[in-house]
Amino acid sequence: MAERKDLAVEKKEAATPEVLEKREKVTLVPPVDIYEDEDGIVLLADMPGVKKEDLEIEVDKDVLTISGEISTGVDPLAKGLYQEFAGKEYKRVFTLGPDVDSSRIEAKISRGMLKLILPKIEEVKPRKIEVKVA
Image 1 (cartoon, rainbow, N blue to C red):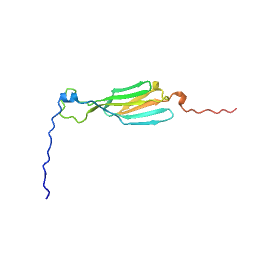
Image 2: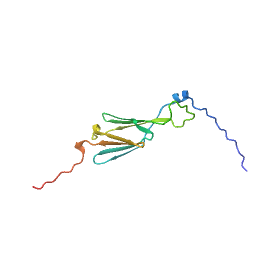
Image 3: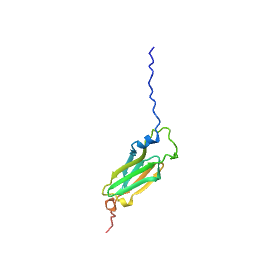
Image 4: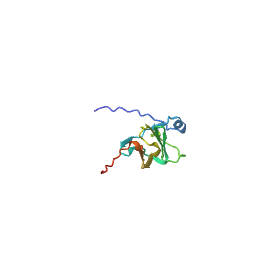
């Protein structure tokens, strides 16, 4: 028979509010799917836990920034006993091409899925030319 060796188990102290405040803030990068159709570009970002009021979308020149705060639903005055999840914020930055009309960007969020519609400027949209009979 094999001898059993006792495993040493470390006892970790519970994180106190002082330790939690000293932790470095972790920013999560949401996974994103991007596809293009004839009207523009569609961007789908997976941001579970983010509500509409905690979401911020900014366009500055040709830079699109998406950020959102995760709502835990826990009373802020409650004392945490143990915490494994450190990230509380999502952030992602994209550079927009010259064919995106940034003044007409639309955003929708539903069940943690953010959908951004980035329309093309009219000059770059494909168009059909009507052929007339002379």
